Amino acid sequence: MKEQEQLHDMWKMFVFEGKLHPDMESMIQSSWMRSKENHVDPFQTIGKEKLSEKEIQQKLRKKKGLIDTAQPLMKTLYHYIKGTGFLVTLSDEEGYLLIVIGDEDERMAAEKINFVVGANWSEEVMGTNAIGTAIKDKLPTQIMSYQHFSVINQSWSCSASPIFNRAGKMFGVLNVSGLSENMHPHTLGMVVSNAKAIENQLMVEEMTLQWKSHKIATKTITEQVDLIFDDIIGENPFFLQSITDAKLVAKTDSTVLIMGESGTGKDLFAQAIHNESARRDFPFIAINCGAIPKELLASELFGYVDGAFTGARRGGCAGKFELAHEGTVFLDEIAEMSLAMQVLLLRVLQNKTVTRIGGAKEIPVNVRIIAATNKNLQQEVSNGRFREDLFFRLNVMPIQIPSLRYRKDDIPILVHYFVAKLGEKLQKDIPNIPDDVMDFLCKYDWQGNVRELQNVLEYAMVKANARVISAELFPAYMNIQRNEEQMDFPPIPRKDIIQKQAIEDSIDKYDGNFSRAAKYLGISRSTLYRKMKRYHIQ
Image (cartoon, rainbow, N blue to C red; front, side, top):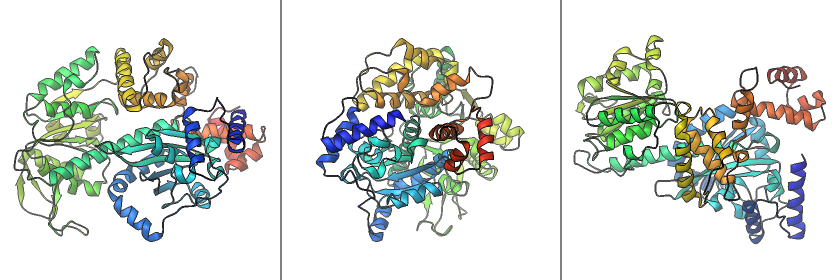
């Protein structure tokens, strides 16, 4: 509460006296100055600029590609924070809201301030806010309570990350907003991770569109990143053995099954195998079997003929196997494929042909299949969720990538690599990593593996005001996990961390009055007691 009062005092000093407090973050200071120069009203209580219904529909049509790609990932993100008082939003590069997903109470609160589809939340219109300031700075941004320039936003705290296309042009902004008392520092890392996932999916779809415009029968060089094994970082003996196995596989044309936890780099291995194989000059097409609805996956992989279903493109459409002719198809999250789809994939492996949905003609395809999974496929076979014959077809050349917690000797190498790489992107020079920070990173469990390491380093570097990274700059959940390891009760899932903090904050807010705290949270007193017992709140 004291920190909030200090922020409020800093805001009043600037608004009423025109003075910037030296302790205010430089990024906020710059944004406040821009807001003042743009004559933004710091006392506005409702969003003032909103498109007409006709303009909204035009905007949604213009951004259909971004919306179609982002929406499934946004729904997945919301699934994990549902019921915790947050909104997940998508805006375009100008700050106009395209999608707003969230709990009913929060959506109603947002509607009261005109934070709805079609509203303009740019910095020029609304002053300092996560969406608008992320657009101006082209960086992931978290704005808390009184850091907002206008009072309309000061009861909220928001975390936003820009979304860029392959050319490096900003395409939109992903944002998570919630009431200030519910926000946590690690929220920004979660948003950055999902923005990256949207960028990756956009890249895959853009590459696919490029290939649809070419005659696949002719030899055409792909425009993907030319990643090879020398670009994969690591010196751990078990990890190096995985690379050695993959290099041997690359020289063959055999089907490959890459196994490893999420974030270990299975996609990097797949690209390197393709780029060091005889198929390197032909398409590499990746598809995430878990990110596409089951009813649409067949048409994505095998294509469809004219009139195959309502909404089918006139003239039909080639599937990924046709588009990848002579190249490689990378099937990520293969364990998420339905049993019906597994039968169709088995036919492709056996017959080397595909039949478009709604058609009868068998089309010859010459592709190499690389599959990847973070699950134990043998266990999935035993449980009846994966076909045994398909497993044996895919498991010709298995490659196991070790988790980061089993190759912790690689963490210092990866940290220095990512810090240098992110330094160029963020235009920040971090010359050294303090020993206590490196020790902190080496002791962490890394459930999200290398991807999580990269994301939290970017999070810390965004927050760093000086040329030094400290342990305090990393997401709060990393410290929570460390504390939980010393306790005698099971770790709390990250979704519950937010709920626990909300309960503790409400009890503190009402000085231990449980009845008022429960009412504030919108739950009964008995429910509050039950949750306090569950979260070990005294």
